[in-house]
Each structure stands twice: as C-alpha cells, then as structure tokens.
Length: 212
Image (cartoon, rainbow, N blue to C red):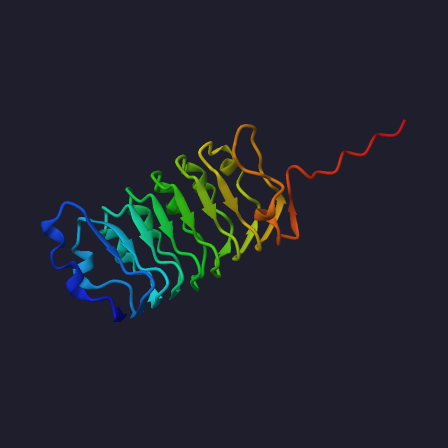
C-alpha cells in the first residue's frame, strides 16, 4: 500500500465478530484514523508500524473499545499521547516506539490493567514515570528507553511480579533502581545505562564504617 489508509478496509467490519488489520511495512502517509475505522467496533488488532504516518494520535481512538493489539511504531507521529488511550480496557499490547511523540506519559495508561507490553521507546517524551503504571499487574515488558524522562523510577514497578523486562536506558532518571526479591527485573544490565544520576540497585557502595 501507499498513500493514505484506505477507508474501504473497514467496510465489512461490522459483519465480523473479530476484525484484524495489518498494514506494517508499507508507504502509508497522512493521518492515522479514517471515519470507517472509528465505527469498526469489532476491530481487535490494528498494526501499522514502519510506515510514514504523521500527525497526532487523535483522542477519538478511545472509541475502539475492542482493541487488544495496537502497533503504531516507527512512523512520524507527533504531539502528545492522548489520555483517552486509558479507555481501551481490553488492550494487551500498546506499541508507539520510534515516533516523535512529546509531552508526558498519561497517568491514565495505568487504568489498562490488561496491558502486557507497553513500548514508548525512542520518542521525545518528558516528565516523570507515572506512579499509576504500577497498577499494570499483568505487565511483562515496559520499554521507555531513549526519551527525556526525569525523576525517580516508581518503586511500585518493582512489585509487578509478571514483569520480565524494564528498559529505561538513555533518559535523565535519578535515584536508585527499585528492586524487590522474586521480581524478574535485572538491576545491573544495559537497560539502565545513559542515566548519569541513576544508581543501579545491585551496585551500591558499602556504607562507610563508623569511627570510634
């Protein structure tokens, strides 16, 4: 495909119980949503990575309540991440990596307790990591590397027992990497490099001995 996302793709949507669209690795340009897509209530899987889509992610995306998988990675999307994404209560995969997204991470993403993968890496996101992300008790991978995040990593993230990968490399984070026993977050690997003021939890200097 080349040009804009074709409207006709969603013409048969309402006649199907589940509808999936994969448009990755094409030459699609223009905005993300078309009118017929917003009316496609059976849309479960939408993948449009590695294209040339531009503009912002519109708040109307909240109308796609049935979405389970959303991959918009490696495009030219800008603007901020809409808080309305937090209304997608069935979403398991949210991949927005390698765009030009700005602003902060909406705390409303912490409402999507079904999320297993949240990938916001390689954007221009700033601000702090929301404490609300600790509510994502099914989360397996949280990828926030290569942004401009600052502040401390919320301690609650280390209590997500399902987590297998946490990557916050190349931000401006500070403080200690949170750690809990029996949680699958390695504290001394490359997922934390590039944060000059961040101290890995397994590389702490011993406390100086008291004199006298």
